Length: 337
Image (spheres, rainbow, N blue to C red):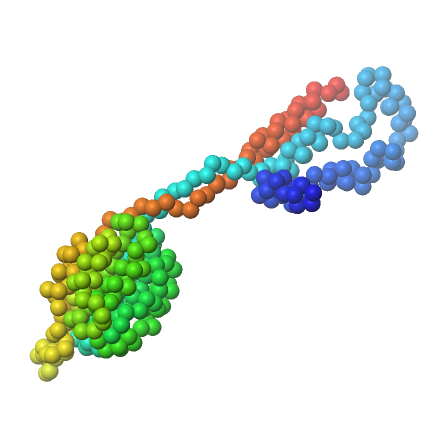
């Protein structure tokens, strides 16, 4: 048997086991101080023999060594300083959180600078990033995954509680990174595949897009039906200012063509099919309100990590040391003079 196997349980019972090395300190001090047993007396007086005879006649003897009660008090004090601990019963506290997949459109239409943010016109993607970053700030306890889509859909991050990584990946995206088209159906299918392994009731997809399905292999409504069968709830957000941030001589202008093409009716059917909600945002304030509404989705409680709490037991040896010290003081006061 190795030393680790022999003393492992002992040292595991103390938070600071190295303090047990202080147990022999009083004996070392007694051996090194003058006047120890067998050594020269600490004080020489001409009437030492007469004083010893008087003490012997009165039933008193000179103190030799450290009293057993003092030893016991010191040992208990050292044990208390080492913080003895006891493992409690295994507990598994519940954790509140959501499992969310975010699908963000990176198609070419997300380049349109028709959103006002901070007093200037920015692209739809820039405004969406700012709002989603704020949304992630309040996701403590949630697991969030990120999907981006254009001509094709790609998963940038799996479901994770490392929300800083999710924000960094989102911040690094640019329009047309996945192609110039809009594959809404493929994005839904990919999110469904990623959420399929999660417990029922925790599968949520938030889809942000400004266009119509123009690419991909799967029809969006068919993908929504597959998501419904797998218990995935989809909330859709149709986003686009339609030229609200642009003006000529102070007169607002309305964009035409690609900037107006948002299939709001199709997105609403997707949300209704899966039991989710459909939203429309024309500016940053509306988008913030939508994500605030999504923030109120009822959280799901799931079991947390199994833990065995450590219970502090230093109070018992500390109380014993104080009791021994009190007895020593009482004996000293009661000793005949």
